[in-house]
Length: 334
Image (cartoon, rainbow, N blue to C red; front, side, top):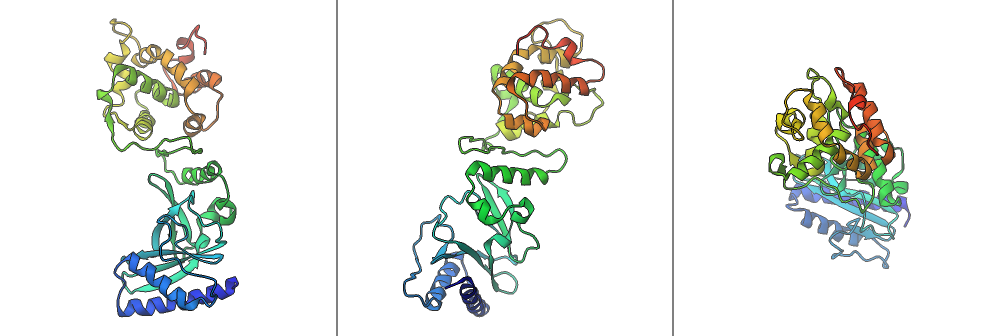
């Protein structure tokens, strides 16, 4: 059976499913999926091909028909859009070369359609793992936007897949938005924590560590008091990367409690004093933080031993009433 033969078979399959849905709407995805199998069994004339009614629960695609595969989608809503499988395709059937989607839409006027899988994948939705999102009859596919074919993408190692996904996601960000996931390798386990912690409840050592990381990534904090949104990136970093909620981010750098941590005398520029107090922690952060974070926040990759120097340059560009490079990290090795 060649592709033309199989696609003719799909035409018959969806036609029969649609007729049955008009008479009696399919009530669940399981019932619909098994009915797809039933009809396929009658349409496939090759006696060597058997339809598996008990595949692995995570099998992709749902149904294998020799070198052809069918991913079954079902909705009770009046939409042709659905979340699909993980971009990693861990349980991909290696014997399947061509994958099609058979979609049962039971909302509104019940209909059933089929389409080549790669043509209807339009987006990546991220939960605990990035998952494809598909739409029947979409104007443009995700792979066209990423400028790579599905066949090429599907055989890439995980880290290379994630580079494509990350670049796609970054291109869709609006001003002020950040990615909450940046990992490219399987061993990088970062994800948004389920339980959010309050900054005020952290230990002093943890507070200093997080202030140092945020200060390093967000040199805009040294800008003048009239600069709007200068603490937004700090708040986003703490929440999306560490699951820490800081209700008053400004106080992390300008409150007397942090500015006078190393001395009780008042006066001076509080942001300068606050940063001077955590210089050791900032140096350690520069040595240990993932390069992907600096690419994300600074838009450039910087070697670990050059990050403090680059931070001072960026801070000087943002500061108006003082020059951080003239007063911070003096006589320190980094």
